[in-house]
Length: 232
Image (cartoon, rainbow, N blue to C red; front, side):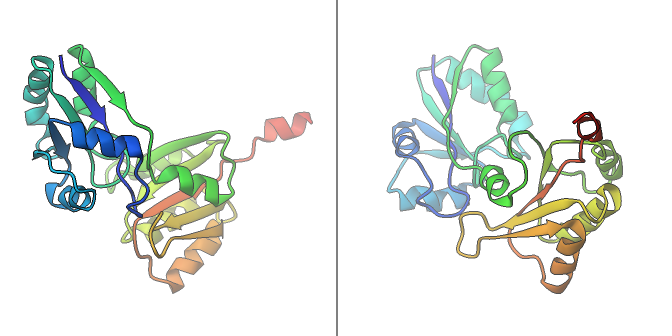
């Protein structure tokens, strides 16, 4: 039976890939990539030449069954990558991993790059306990989701596009309160990497004056646990 490797790729600097990841990609019988055009640039940079096929959110429901059958009935080693970071974390991959496990295919996920961990650490918000929410619903269910997090005590982590950063920060201020501590990390591991820290009101003011650019990780501190404070 074959093997499925989940291989993280750099979110920014191309040096942020492990030696093991490079070896697995070189030894793979074929690579499943979110966007073959994007991944081709990385493989070319690493001087890796292996067959590559598309595996993205628009085709994964249709192809996951045949892919798993192909892996399960052969001795092929397959590497799954996304455009950046770790597959299945706000990227395609979960369905393939789940189906592979259900069919007895061994799955190994390599440790490596992901955007929210460096964003969390550099935010200076509590990092001992946190909740990763990924991308919020763009329309339906968005307000309901935010309201459900109103009393969340852990640091909250969201992914966001630059076009909705100001909208999200404004909504956060309305739901969590303008004085809630927060941070906005953008362009992780890239040339213009930046982390803006302060209250939600201060972040709204900052990005009203400075147009958001790049890929963002938004972090919001949890509500204070008044029960714990009262008991001290």
